[in-house]
Image (tube, rainbow, N blue to C red):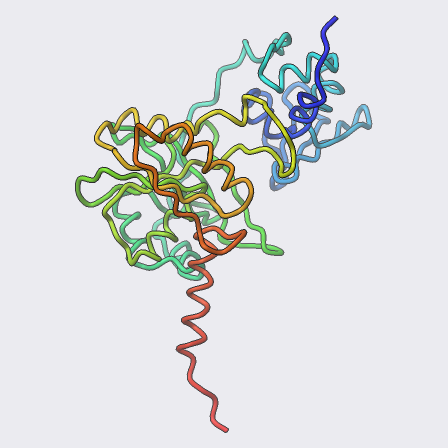
Length: 325
């Protein structure tokens, strides 16, 4: 009789239903007219929010957040099979829909006629005009229609777009719209190229961190700046041995494969538990083959986008004329 450990159960619970569906069964997701909401092609009364991952199957009046509960309640898997599948150890269940439908093709969002709105938004976030213009000129950043999202484009070695990350410029309660374009291949993530030959690549968790750090370094174009498109890390204070968290970033692996001239990896992940954990994993794996430079933000809990915005606000206050008394 199959059994699972407490560590495996905890690891399985860490994955959200939307993360699982988007990664492994994207063909089952169909966008609804409601913002950030999707439904299943095989259960139209099933709705899931892409931001919170909260799902509800109206016809059965059941819901949840985790992928584990989804697999058990919606797909009818046994508990142990669901845990094993999510831990990527011995998956014994493959939904029949997966074999029938192909992954949707990648297509860039439609371009707007200018980049005025995203430039203003990125300026507000502390990104310099010089850095924005550099990215636009390399056709890796533009403004889309109809929502005027900032689109960060990732290309393969031939220069063909294979990845896009959309970031909304309108925020509500400090949170904005974020998503990867359907069909994106994370191994071709957003990367700012250097102006000349270099032996160094810098890695960040997010696209905007790359622009922010480049701004803080006065627009230096002397190295590749690669977004990993996010990182996978266990929750703090947990002892998890899942292989999912030990997997190396696809974007960095693909980049290094295509750039044998690279000798140095500068790690600029966030200065929080997840960022530090990812930094240690990369350092442990690549040290010896590459020179590793760890350059996390000095401020605890911050990323480079935070630092760029703080510097912008500090300069704004400093330059404000003193009020007459």
